[in-house]
Image 1 (cartoon, rainbow, N blue to C red):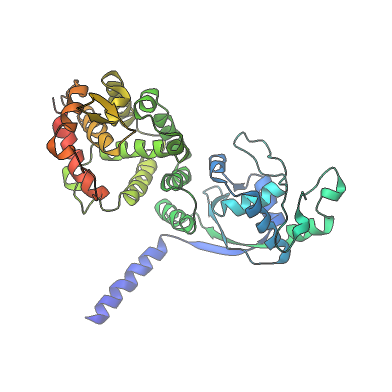
Image 2 (cartoon, rainbow, N blue to C red):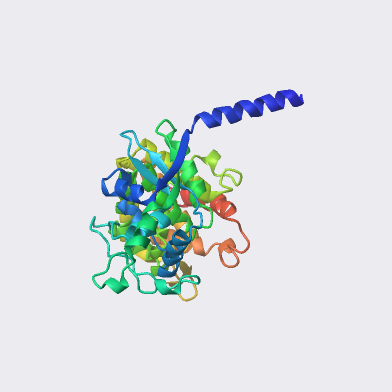
Length: 374
């Protein structure tokens, strides 16, 4: 019996290894910079929104290079035409390119050369640049050569690897010590799968009636929670009933990661039918309650209070989207449905206290479909 289990595991390992093929070798910073300059190393402009190291962090990296401290490997993906696309190492590669004045911004124009700060071991880095008009602020030619000749360990995910496996590896590599939010990470992953799909998703999240009805705070928008809400709608509004159980919804972030990547792979330019359902749903909400739909209704004060609530979004946006997307009749008196919902005995107090996300979704998505049925 033990032998059979071992054989099964070995077969599974062998099969998984075939889905991804890698290579690797050391490359000088000068060589890597030349590849970027010539368009053979792709650092997508969309990724620059995730380039968020502070000047201190950037300067510590340059300090490490100058002192010969080994850096973690940089992962690139080999595309069909042979070019490399950066998969992991955005902060490090961007810092190195910015130092030299080679990094292009989202407008495809070079960013200014990085101005370094003093570090623990090299306080005299303060105010230095790669090549400044005033010579005393420049790194010396010898130091510039030292940096150019420094080696980086490059790991190459070869073109034979499956797109889904590249996606999984990107996610795993970027999950270690990341300061990005779950959605910022997901956005980077979607850009890696299909930049066009990500642009389509951003267009949906910018749809005026979606923006005005959700009324998210500046903090949530900065963290791109608007994109996560749009994805929740796209992936959950028509989700089959047998996939709305606590066991199937146990890890919602992973579901959003996996299913959004699958959708981006299948519909790299976006899905017109989903876009139509999305827009019509928020058009109906905007015309029947607007942003009050996603706030708690206070029957005593006869007004909506507080800020945006996920619970209300799951009940009303997903419930309405279910009927619009399926072509079934729905109630247009949304304001009445909202007030009736908040008047339910089980919604008057403690409705979300101690409840897990999967428990809430399991209850409220089917309830919304029922309440909004025409």
